[in-house]
Image 1: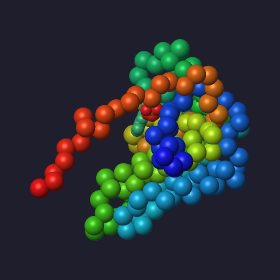
Image 2 (image 1 turned 45 degrees about the horizontal axis):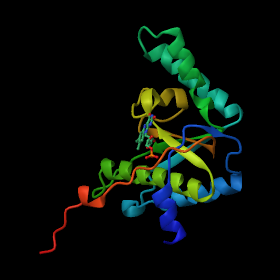
Image 3 (image 1 turned 180 degrees about the vertical axis):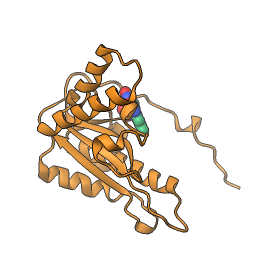
Length: 187
Ligand SMILES: Cc1cc2nc3c(=O)[nH]c(=O)nc-3n(C[C@H](O)[C@H](O)[C@H](O)COP(=O)(O)O)c2cc1C
């Protein structure tokens, strides 16, 4: 089997992520991989906010402000969980979709393009020896979070890719049988 296919088959999401994160040269390659996602009419609906160092504190403040203002009856321990969330990895990439008006390309196609960009990031990370996990939760897939992240009302956060070097034991990858998922039309 070639290395590219092996990388796809062995990609694994990682919850325990530590330093080092990819270098800025490596992140450039990773974004190039992201931007090779299929993109109908090349509308370029995907963009990314890269968060690390003091940026993680800023993201933590944004999560905290969001939680305090938008969640009713917020419990203190929940607030702490939200505030600590960005520190689960040394680097976080916020996946953003900005759909463009186009007569043939509906918003859903543009969202799928950004999702494909997210997967390309995860694959590029594993090919370089790093790990990541895509998370959504309270701070994604809603427009209320936009003002806390400095986004426009036409943008949407599709998720947070937590990125770093995997630590600890990896989970086993299930060996799925394609015939359970594929039906074939041969005639
Ligand atoms: C759009 C999307 C959102 C996700 N959100 C979360 C999340 O908020 N929390 C979480 O633990 N896993 C989330 N996951 C699942 C993990 O990213 C991961 O796919 C899952 O743990 C299975 O691991 P695997 O990718 O190695 O098969 C999400 C996955 C996708 C595609």
